[in-house]
Length: 69
Image (cartoon, rainbow, N blue to C red):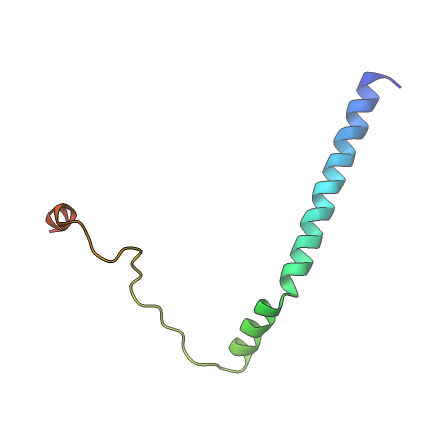
């Protein structure tokens, strides 16, 4: 086998493996229990979800408060 043929076959195999993996991941995530619960909430007209301001820290450095305003 020549080097060109070997590289082409390797690239084709890698491409098919990546596409297959992506497709399997998409199918599995679409059928996950979390996704089904969310779909059920939306289709049933579940409660409105409201997300307030999110903070990752307990308190802000005073120097940053001065910059803000």
